[in-house]
Image (cartoon, rainbow, N blue to C red; front, side):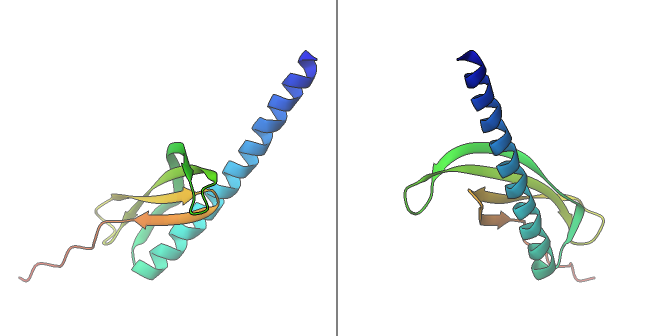
Length: 105
């Protein structure tokens, strides 16, 4: 009986790991699209998990809520942090700071 429990726990961890990898891949694709659309440089081409919790979606079902951090720049000099929010496998939002207007000389 103990071996069955260990096998089930191991199986659940494997399913979670595969699901988390797919969600991270979807977050990476979303940031890539946003960088092209909003005209910013996505530095390092990677996202890093920052927060993880449970949240309900619009149908009331519980889903994993994940916040990923990424680095970007508008000018190639100033490094900023942005965030992509995923609920389940759906991208909820991407948060980047507005581009500051250039000062007139």
